[in-house]
Image (cartoon, helix red, strand yellow):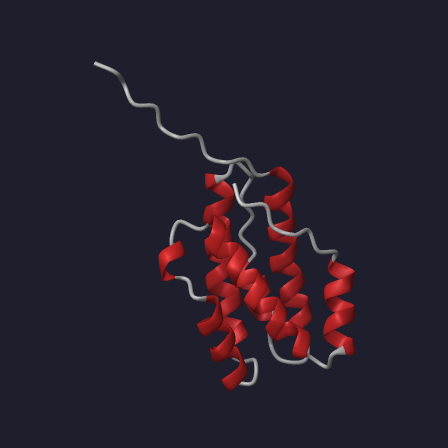
Length: 129
């Protein structure tokens, strides 16, 4: 399984505040890329497009992104043998501009859980005849 980077939530908050929100777009790209690595829908996920949409909508797209990608994370957790936690709705609610870093923490916490407790799905064994 792809092993993403464990990011402390306090650093996400600090970088978001210090950069006046510009870090949010960088984090969005990285998080989308990492979710792409573990998702069943990897061919449909384009990190650059998600980031572009977030930038041109002044961050409002992140509300939709938070809901959509936390649902994908929920599915990936089940596939990789981690107890799934559906935080899509709280993440979306707390992803409004100015408090976006709170929604980011919900998503990053789920990614950290996946990297810490997840296992690669076992390949199906073919029966020899």
